[in-house]
Image (cartoon, rainbow, N blue to C red; front, side):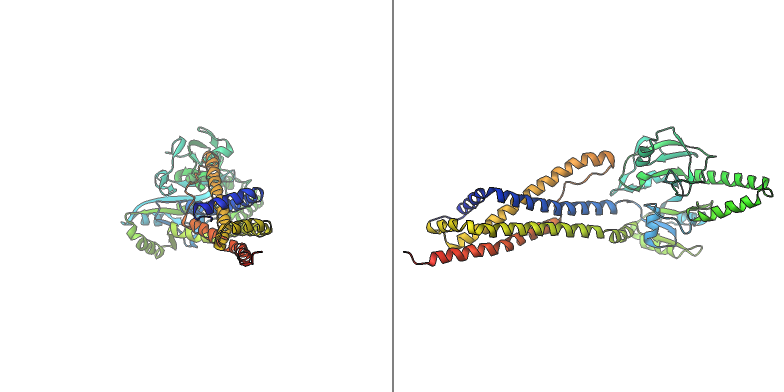
Length: 438
């Protein structure tokens, strides 16, 4: 008589060893599909977490009245152009509000070789945080403390091969080839930021006085030329105005205005009250948004790709489970003799059914273990590159609640798919057991 427990596992193990070549292919198929499924889920979770922590420590973002996502894209991701700007009177009014702790202005409109230039204050480097509260650090140099100084994001410094002491010229607008350069005020590189994996890496930072100075000098220079050549070059002047109108979408904010404000409050309890006060500001139309809420809304728009990837990985896994089921069915004819032998030595019909179910679960378990080990190894290897090149570190915590649910569904599906060939073996063993002996 065949025993239970350990004996059943031993028989299943020996049976799998006997069909090792087909079993190995099935295990690799299961492992690959689980690897894809868990890998996509891990990347999705890490991307969502990193996306949500692009900016932290900022209670409100304030800009001219527009859409929430438009303001977020402009102020944090620096995508698009401002439809209007905030006057300095409004900036001062918000700064003087008793519930406001600090205000960091942001002025956009210029670029350097297709990288955005951000006009701001020294406080930006202290207040702007990312990744759940991580501050900005300098890999070289320091923050600007006077006019005509610039701090580079990590990607800007690498792609343009700039270092401390280098001089550069800002350009008007965001075109790849700008026809308007602020060459009357060369800017000196005084600092390079460490990689953050955020839009900070792709920007140049100067103080607001630099922004105002280069545009004030430009306007003064243009007025002098206009006065000297007003009559002789009247037609040419009209052509220049038309060219300026053509690029109006990339215009710099007028002097005395800023594009957006990063606002920190004395207490987060007052966030909604201050937001309502700014949105109802009577002097000019303003919009205050909650960064976390806006990031969630933006993720809902761009996060559909994750559902596509997840769907593909699920299809891959279903195909591997069908392969497992096909292998079990195909082996049934070969195993008739095995089943007969088991019956002849006293194996009950339920033993035969349990044997095939356990075999399929063993195949899935080995495949899952291989997939988990492979995913952890892959993340470890990739992290060495990501930290160096992008400043990103993927977590080794790959088992989320959604991943555990997926693994549970994997085992349930494998169990259900194995029941049909197992039931066939069970029926065949009963037929053999009930047939009259000669």
